[in-house]
Length: 140
Image (cartoon, rainbow, N blue to C red):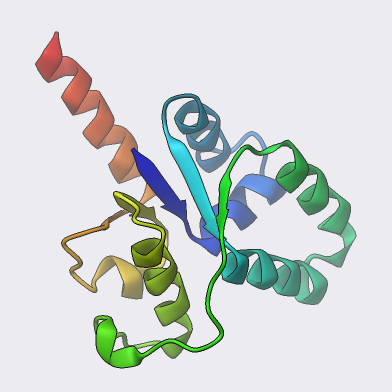
């Protein structure tokens, strides 16, 4: 499966390498394709420059060690092609996941979680883990 990771998931994994989000990421990279967009990379560096500048090296190391598919986000997006979002900053995340042909968009952003996309399915890291566990139990 193709999993698009939102910025907030990656920030948590970088800042808290022993957290449930980081552990989630360690598990999913073995069985799924991780997809990140150029927009998310830019946003990550912006967040770290503004709020966590003492952890920029951690971000760089994290991204250099993470195996992921990078998709390039276009500079212009036709809003009419995508669902309405309350927060304009969420549109590039949703559009990137759609452009990247992802099965799931993994986020902690409540606004994105409430958009109601059919594909990609939007879940928190915890919801995705529970779904996978249920699928494993059903096949046993």
